[in-house]
View 1 (cartoon, rainbow, N blue to C red):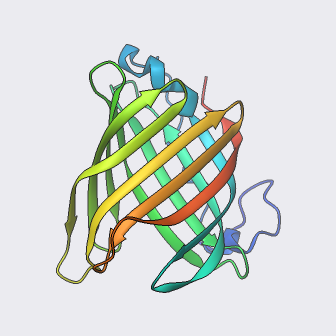
View 2 (cartoon, rainbow, N blue to C red):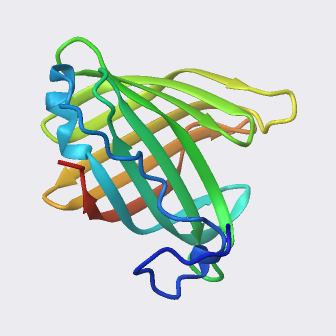
Length: 187
C-alpha cells in the first residue's frame, strides 16, 4: 500500500511516494554496551537540506534519517530524501554504524545507485567525522571515489554534511542538512 498516508501525517507529497518512516521496528532488548557512546543518534530525525555539485544545479530537499538497534553491537541506519519543491524521491541509503576502538566508528552503506561505501572515522562528544576507506561502484554506477561525512548533534538538532569526489572531480561539498528529532529512540 504505497499510496496510504501514515497515521497522523500531514499532506506531505512524499507521503504518497513512501509507505512511512524508515525506522527500525522497536524491539524490547537493551542497548548493547558497545553502543553507549552512540546512543545520542537513536531515533528518527527530519528536516531540510540543500545540495549541489559542479555537474548539477543547486537543489533543496527534505530528509529523514533513522538510527535504531536490535541489541547487537551496531546501529541500523536508514536515510531517504525527496525534493522540497515537488516531493519526488531523490535518494535513499541504508547501512550500519559500528563502534570500533574507543572513539572510532565505522559506517557501511549501500546506495541504490550502485555504490557501496565503507567509511571510518572518529566520534568526539556528539560529533562524528567519517571518511571513506573504500568505495565500490557497479559497472553502471557513476564513478564515486571518495565520500566524507560529518554528523553533529546539539540537543534535538542534527547537522549533516557530505563531501564527495566523483566523476573525475576532487573532494567537493555536495550536501548539508539540519534535522530535528522527530521521534525518540524506542525505550
